Image 1 (spheres, rainbow, N blue to C red):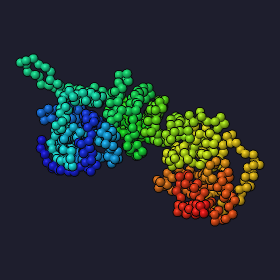
Image 2 (image 1 turned 30 degrees about the horizontal axis):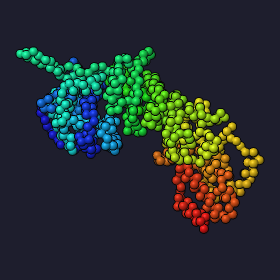
Image 3 (image 1 turned 90 degrees about the vertical axis):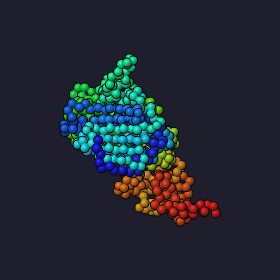
Image 4 (image 1 turned 180 degrees about the vertical axis):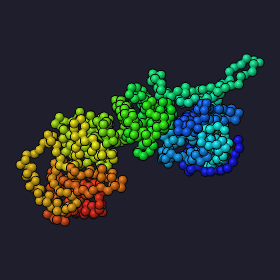
Length: 633
């Protein structure tokens, strides 16, 4: 091996922190380092096989692609080698000297100090290579790219500190070898039986052979032991190609960890083979926890795509809609071409059929989870907000998705979202024909909205919508099971048959009594409001603000404004409760200065009650203090 162009370079600052964590903090489940290295090697082989479809020169004739694990007990090293796609010098610096995956800062901020929980985070952030430093105090990587000459190979070395060395070397074989120099107290991993057990546990179903030297067989005294050869230590058969009855629960769980780089067990999975007009196999998993980038809609996502068991691409997003981006797994088609590309996938009608079927399968998986309230609450807490994107994106499955949605309501305990729309309809009063909801910036604002007062008085349940997406969601749902959604803070309140209206003559009398007050309030507030009117929706509050039927709701308005989008101006209606003592006092007030102060305080309080900001909070404080002083004098 010849060397040249040796450089010493510094790790990216976040990589330094991560290396320190690996070396000094994470001691739980040390053996996962081997699973991560085998998984990376398998990915490299998949990529070489795929690249060879368009450039056959990248695949050497007669060479079987596979992974080899070698142990040197004297030197206390473990070497994981593959003949996959390999790396160039620049790729080694990029892939091994930095953590290229976005979100590493969030990873470091997520650390809790709990070794077991912190170790589980590794898989979420795609930093599995660095787990090598849990058991090794030095790591050496030698690699030659499939597109590079032997003398263009690269040697990367690090002791897990602030720097790493990289140099150009000569390597005859395409692929990568990762050599771990084990720590003095990690010698258990320089044992063949120990590593075999780890491979069987974590990587038995890697689709390429994993080879190790045979354990020496006992020989009779005086006989010479035969030279050991390499043997395959894993099943080396793609798990999704096997019958479901032949795969154990533990095998499904370990395969999930292999394809997802997650350290947790999955919440549930579905293994299915379709035959007929279309032929494909799928193995779909719902994780137990949301990935860190779940709400970054532009982040890479999707299933691993195979065609006739040949790896084609990671993160094929065409097979599931965006609102199911948390699903992991593989799909293996017999109908697609081996030279398929992302562009072809977007136009292939076969993909549309597979996408529709896979989407329904995932929704069926979620529906089964919903049969167990406790388990479904775990799912909903992790993925509920993303599922709420579904009705707008997937009209064909709108009703199915709606049945899976959960909300907080006026009968919920706290902010927990655990009430289904079907359950709401079962509890509706016989004469009720609508699903009532109130939308606000947070749960407490929604739960304490003055618009709920008449509904609480009549014992009518109301959905408390406080996720940013909720008002947008309801606008796309429109109705559920034939019951239209009704915003209790929008338009004139119409309770239909639920309304126990006063005598018409009595209503006219009230309107006549407060006619002058309404006129004065309209004049005082002027262009600030659409109009001032009396209301029957309040029982405890003196006043509230109401959005007109055709205007955008306040929750949606705030969401768009926070995103920097321009929203059209709109004026709300100011409603007064004629049965409230403050409104009665306001109606009798002869002093116009006191009238103006009291009226503006009521108006500002209505703005605060809906969770909005006052344009001039100092004026509100000044008026309120003035009124308090008058009361105390």
